[in-house]
Image (tube, rainbow, N blue to C red; front, side, top):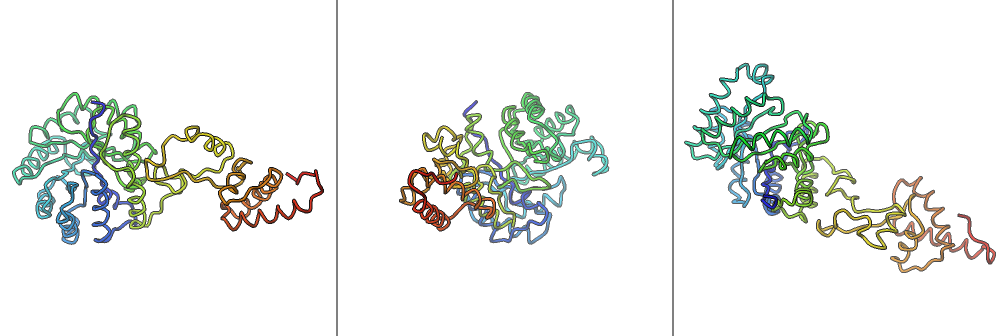
Length: 387
């Protein structure tokens, strides 16, 4: 159904923290988990119990918060990993195993029969322990398609509720992703989740395509954190799904900017000013053509209403500004200037922008106003100032 909810499973606290050099403190993890839950994110992948007792303690601390969001942990298809998950007190586990021949042979040193047997054994063991189970297919995008169907069949029969298709190396494109999920959807009634990496800059596009093909769940990270080039950004999926596909996520878009800032600070990875949805400059306009159009009607250059994200348009002056921008900017300061003076401001403004490498602040605009006002006073009557 076109209006069916797409479930966001955010893995900022697991895959996001796996980005090289990123490490959250306990307090930061609790704050991030709380912020995501408060915003309406329904599932959080909160850690890897096999990392040790400290990790398990932090996972238990998140569980004990009693959040609305459901905490999930990531485990290998191993008995000791599962024991660690059970000790954390979570109600759901992602049991991950390689499903491509490349990784089965050269990473695990096993064969396909072993993978299928372990999936059957471990899923049943986790279910017997009272856990809901998602089976994570590592390197699914390089797996033999027929073997992937066999993996899903075994997982479903053993009692798993979900299969996570992991594009571990970020090699898919949206067209092949949609085709893959159409095939998976025809083969199973299980929940299907896409875990997309951004190595080719296609994680968001691939995740959208997966939903088109039948995915019910999307794995995300705040600001696109994650291994190598990262994962599908939470903020992009939350805004794109309802706008492009009419599929709500239940996540409050107005909270995305503050969550982004929280994670940026905790991760030490600043958000680029032009980052979609949460970047500081995405509703900032300098180009004369755009500012003129926005002043006439915001719909002229507005794809997303900034108010939907708790933001607003901001117009600044710079090298590409035009007369309308200058007249508007000084009008906002309560100063009426003539077109002659505005042309003089523009000429000086372009020099300022090239040398200062920033937009002028209020004091800079006042300096430009005084300079051009003095020049206007000295100019002979009827002689325009230099352009």
